[in-house]
Length: 125
Image 1 (cartoon, rainbow, N blue to C red):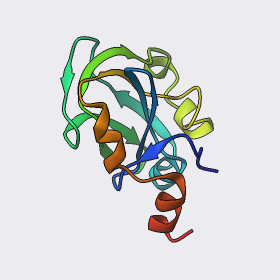
Image 2 (cartoon, rainbow, N blue to C red):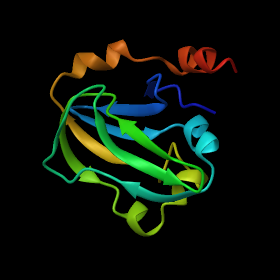
Image 3 (cartoon, rainbow, N blue to C red):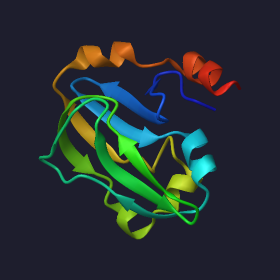
């Protein structure tokens, strides 16, 4: 259920590092807990982000939850499709519903995050 090549945070975000770019999203667990997602607020390209700091929010019919950056760097792309189709986060949170892409300023930060096995253990699954 959780891709092995992703790294995970305790706040239920994931990052896939490819070269100097990290693709960021929320986990299947996060979208399941939120329920039907109706709105996503994401940072614009050019925004500097810091590991562990708030970068946006996800709003569901139940609640609004902050999104935290799993890595530091500069936003190079936001997933524009989520502005008009936020429900994609419920359908494919580990795939087409990625949130942002970040040019990594400290690639070593990835090593501080959980592996898929660690994350599943953290969830108690």
